[in-house]
Image 1 (tube, rainbow, N blue to C red):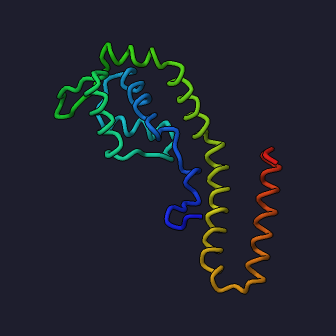
Image 2: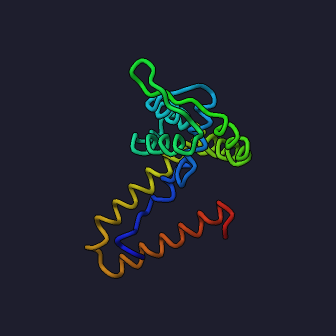
Image 3: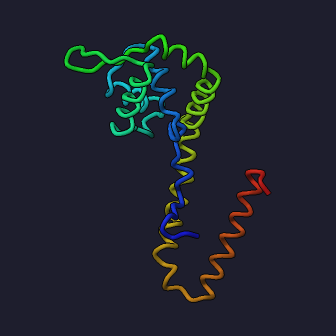
Length: 166
């Protein structure tokens, strides 16, 4: 295990909007109606039921990229830069409609209210366990460390059985 790069919750934190997917959803939002940057951030937060609020540092560079690609055009309205989709943007969404729909389905499933509450409960338990082990493990005897390791191995095995990955 690489201590420097170790992030125990990284996979759980991953959003369907990471890894280049945000451009599809932003473009789809702009297709619905012209929007300004903060309005896009709010719409993305609504999609995640308040769990994920992208930073301006994630949204504005994506808007700039979409504009440079010719998929949107920005114009000033009431002191705000409002973005509208272009014909090229419509074509891009049409060409990528299957991927965009799959992404929208993943977003809906990822942030479904029942899933969000269940995930939050599980992750709170995992986080508390992680903190306990991180704080107490260094001062434990080798016997206690071994016992904890075996408990965690059994727990992981049981969870894999529940999930169906055993």
